[in-house]
Each structure stands twice: as C-alpha cells, then as structure tokens.
Length: 286
Image: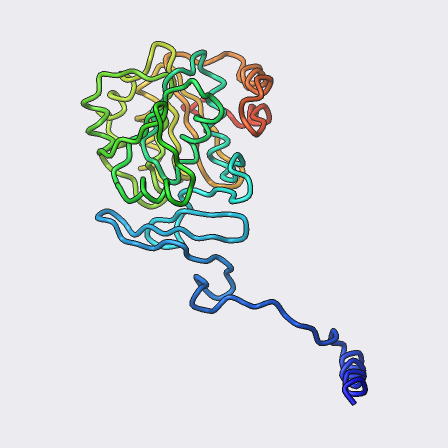
C-alpha cells in the first residue's frame, strides 16, 4: 500500500512539473534572520557608550556593523580562511606598503574588526603595530569574533584618535586612518591641526594612508584637499566596487608606481596581488 501511494505521489509530481517530494533541510527561524530575504545571522548585538555594535554571519563571512546592518560594513573576515582579505578597500590600502622603504613601525587609527592590523602582523612579523580605538567594546568584539591577538608586536590603545596624535612624540613608518564612516566623520579627525599632527608623527620616509568613503560633495573634497596639503606628495585611488577613496601621502612617493607595486608582489608577503592597482592611482590634486 505504501509503495502504491509513493508511486501516485511521484506521478502527481511529474504531471504538475514539481520535483518528487523529499526531506528539506531545517530552515533558520525568522527571529534568527536580520530581514526577510537576507541570510545573515546576528551573533553579537550590544550597545556601547558610543554606538550599537553588531556582528553578523552570512555563510563563510563574518561582518562588523555599527548602528544597524543596513549601514556600511566596517569589517569582514572569512571564517574558513583567516588569511583571506574579503574587503576590497583593505587590499587597496595595503598597496601603500609598496611606496615606503621601511616597514618597522605602524599605527592604525580605528580598529574595526582588526583586519588591517592582523594583516600587517601576519605579513610583517617584525613590524610593531599599534592601534588607537575609542570604544573598548570594539576591541573586545575584535578579540572575540574577528581573531585579534594582542602581543608584544601588536597593541591596542583605548583613546581618542585626535588627542592621541596631538600628545604623541613617537614616529611611525606607516599610519593608517580608518575611522571615517560613510555617514559619520569625526570632526576632530579632519582638521588642519590633526593632519599636521599626522605629518609630524611620520618617520623620515613614512607614509600616511587614509580610507575615505566615496566622496561626492564639496565638504568631502575639501577634506581630502586638507589631507593632501599637509604633505609634499599625495596620490589616491578609487576602489572599483566598494566606493572607497584611498589617499596615500608623505614626504615623497616613487616616480614609478607600477614598478613599486610589482616589487611588493615579488616579495609575496601579501595574500593578494597589488600590481593591477597601478592604473587606479592618480595625484590627489586632480
């Protein structure tokens, strides 16, 4: 009787164009999903004194958000491959390593999910990496969910970025500004005084790298102009897909950008190529 019933069901499925009935995998509860049609799952959601901090997983990728998950993605890592760098702007910001002859010390303002600091820690084991982050919760989330490991070569300072730069008397070979959001830009981090402090904190051949959101308005272009005027040399690129502007500045930059990027690729330190980015670079004043 069961055999006959099964054949009837198969025949009905065939005649109606449906696939034969089969067991379906369990689906996540609606409460586990961020929004209809999205497959992300919240794994952390708390408010700090500065922001709402969220971590969401989608397949192999884990992402950090501030405010809500409809806003800009702060960081993304691969759960399967910790060495992978899924975020386009991080790969393009790392290309600036080709333009500095020394890679002994670095400073990052804005921790996020620690993607850039951990990339430097893996690619340049002898480099000293320091990070300035305002929100202690962000540091804890980076530790618990994104693989941040602090050691003798990587330290996170909980401090205001502008105040830290004004007080410090240290010098770094590389300084990355990664605290500019797509909708919120800390005013203290875009003043002439701050950029002057930044230039003063670079070593003789050091470079400052700024990750800006895609800039269209006059205010944003004025911000890049202030950044560029703090240094004798400045170039930038627009990332092809993620709508970021990466500005690189210092006392001097290589005359042959393509050759410098090719040389970095030959070192094989980074888990991705940077030579194809040569054509994207242009002077900041254009």
